[in-house]
Structures are given as structure tokens and as C-alpha cells.
Length: 59
Image (cartoon, rainbow, N blue to C red; front, side, top):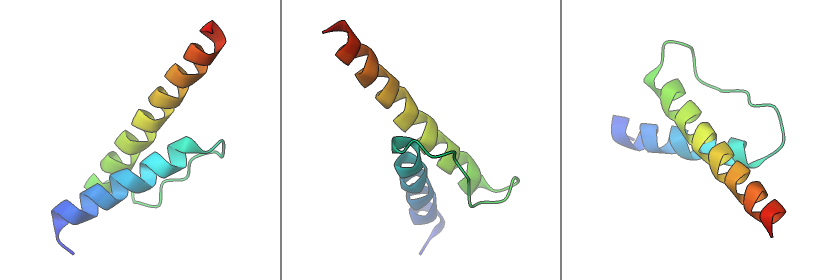
């Protein structure tokens, strides 16, 4: 698996973690680019989830 595929996989894993209510635990070391990708995926999922909650409340 090449670097690009690893980054995509890390982002998808972060996104999955962001969809749950569990506390996030990133499996990558602090100085890894994969950690940044995981955090981005996690943050994107959390933002999407917050918007969905706000829309549900407005209805």
C-alpha cells in the first residue's frame, strides 16, 4: 500500500471514529502525517454530525 492509500485509509478510520459517541483515540504517533489525516476525518464527521443534530432540532 502506498502513501496516498495510507492517508485515505487513515482519514476514513478517523471519519468512522467521528461517527460514534466514543472518545477518540488516534492510533497514529504524534509526528505522523497519518495522524493529521485521521484527525481531519474525525473532525469532518463530527461537523457533519453536529449539522444533522441542528437540522433535527429546527424541524
